[in-house]
Length: 340
Image (cartoon, rainbow, N blue to C red; front, side, top):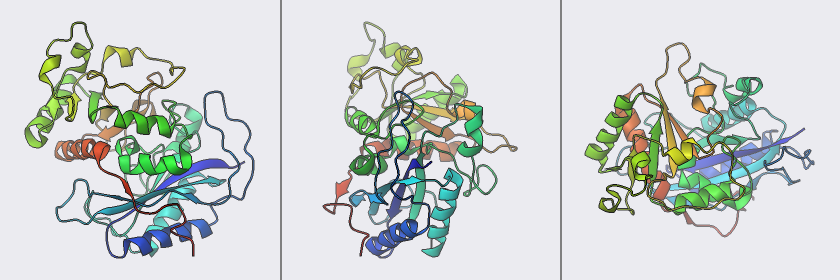
């Protein structure tokens, strides 16, 4: 039976419109997009795939380049939703073959690129159950290589240039880890300043990352757990409009083990937009184990990052904070930009 899949497109080199349109056409013709069929009801609290026809694409959005070398052109971004009987690994194969056909060269992370295609969601696949781990990390190369695959995408929750377009075609899709719809996530990112509370690693590592973000990228540091107390010491000294990072996760989130009955965005300074789960990796696995990436229990959007290279990790988190507030400006009226 088919399941739903969400993929993202990005380009800021060459004829961006033509390249992104060609990518969508190749995906549509690849055989991974299932014909219209009805999936069985999803488990309680999860989204149900309604019968849809073919590749459903968002509007095209223009977004500023985030991180990477200076002088880059703006990106064109879009997402596509479709039903598929292909595995997540097979979808990844098609996307990487499409990138190669369109001249993608993997050089600088966050650098300019002719085309960038990612698997964002694949049904309810995640790392909570042992039976799902083969699909969770199921690429065609060693774990941690460009050909490996982790779904849901470990860092899409910080990418407004993915979340906002996704609401055009998949607003009701739910992230299987924390149970929110993509529409909930988009509203949540807009409701407060870009912010992350760190978990994982040890306290010294978390505080080192926070100190470097403050020194190198002017990110505010707060102790979110301390600020969640009443009265909140030092709450008046922070600029609520600016990005912040915390070496602690508020107790309210640590103790939240069930999804709320209804989503309500919050602007509380002590509640981050995302929990950043950091881990060191091993030479054998290259990625933290699935139970470390997404332990069951917490019901708050997460961002996962390996921190072996501390310089890279600090830059990545700074880019993630920028990505939460970047402008995503629609430049087409609908999702028909790839059809000829």
